[in-house]
Amino acid sequence: MNKVAIVMGSKSDQAVADKAIKVLEAHDIPYEARVISAHRSPEALDKYLKESDDVAVIIAIAGLSAALPGIIASKTEKPVIGVPVSGPLMGMDALLSMVQMPPGVPVGVVGIENGENAALLALRILKAILK
Image (cartoon, rainbow, N blue to C red; front, side, top):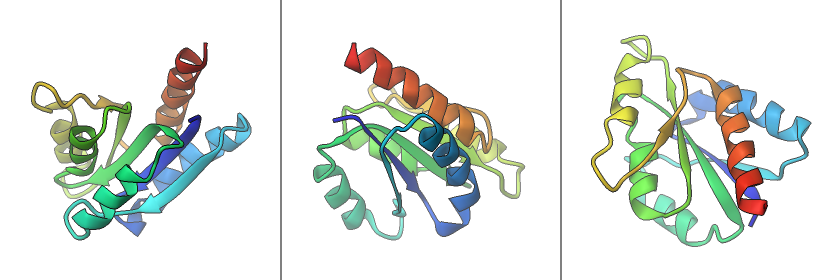
């Protein structure tokens, strides 16, 4: 259980995911990247989370309402790192959605479109887990 999952809300989030992938590859960290919308395919998201036994940390990338990280965090006890994506409100809508999770649904959040920091935080979490 040392893989990082990168879950994007839509294919348009790929550029942000690529920033995280670059860091993970530079550190030889296994990962998988998927596009699974919390709104358009909730059953696929549930299935993925149930079958992701080899995943230790999840990076969830989303814009606009940015529900993806919170929904994932509500369905797993694995660490979830949210990456807000720019949109009509310059990403502030996504950022605020991610940081305002209700009690019991923790999501670590990095800066808008900061896939690099999401991957670096995932690395630190993995190091703490593997000690």
